[in-house]
Length: 122
Image (cartoon, rainbow, N blue to C red; front, top):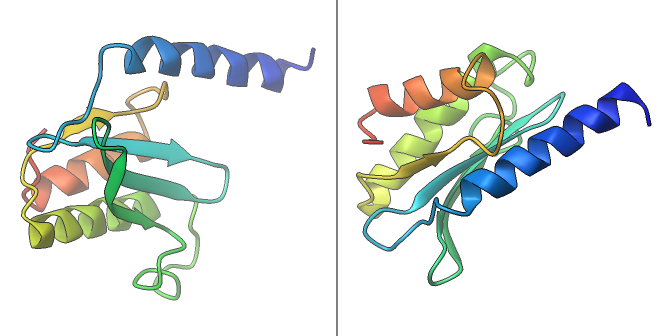
């Protein structure tokens, strides 16, 4: 098995272990982050109702032409600020942060810090 596949499998195991205890509710939905090589995505989800309230990514129309690169920390900060803004517009102030098995470092951390700076409470 190639080393990249082993990394992906390890992340999916961590994700499964984390999700077992981490559930989003109507009062405190889950802010889920997905990171690919070129983009970063964030969603605010109510797991009990199976509903996504807000979503933002580097592919969102608000951000698409704004950045030169979409796979770096600066792009992650923009996505974090956008997701926080959309949440506050919908009346969502508190969320549970789900890093989806990624290490809290780099782009994942940049997204979280930017969302907190805009007023989202984790």
